[in-house]
Length: 280
Image 1 (cartoon, rainbow, N blue to C red):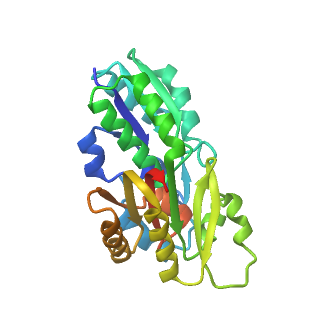
Image 2: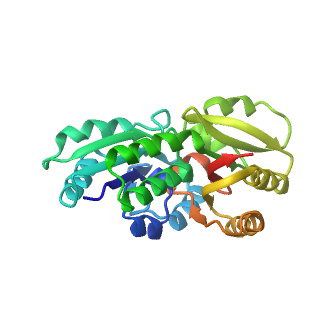
């Protein structure tokens, strides 16, 4: 039986990509006061960003409920006897722990393995895509796990911000706290390192920040997978994709939107590039 891949909604996988590869996406939750929404289901990206700009209520987020994972496991166990779950970094969310703990609550018998990706956003998405492609090509669970673990250090991403205020409010600022206190008007560039948010660069303008994202991706000599995602700036994303196509004309570049649960922490006007490949 084909190995089934499960990930969570912080992967920012486009719906059509997840559906095409047979990836199950378990939603996290976004909360506006007493109102709770399943990420990407009850609340879409297009609905969320006008809300976050207009609302005086600061949104919060929480991981998937245990029942959400067990329902996904039991449903997939009717189709396969092998499931691989790839989650957001445990340093950014409790999702990994929930995914792991709920395996024993399954009603059906099925081997389920859970891997902490140490990433989020489309870096996690690319990891799930690579795993699903291998599974759909006939690789067994142990092979897919080995590939996934091999790919984790081959991933990298850079995300450009207008402000780090949303990240600070949500408590996910990590090592990027060092960027606060600067009197300069800068466009911070962050990444994820060892599973937590980490500073990468500071650029003097939005244009230079986008140039930085291009230079980062263009520095790869071999691309397995690449994605460009945005929150509210599709024109910038398309411009960046166009520039990258001149460097990588044969590679597919996934286009994605930053999900509400991630958007609650990063705010609007973020632009991200994620790459799975080899540098140099």
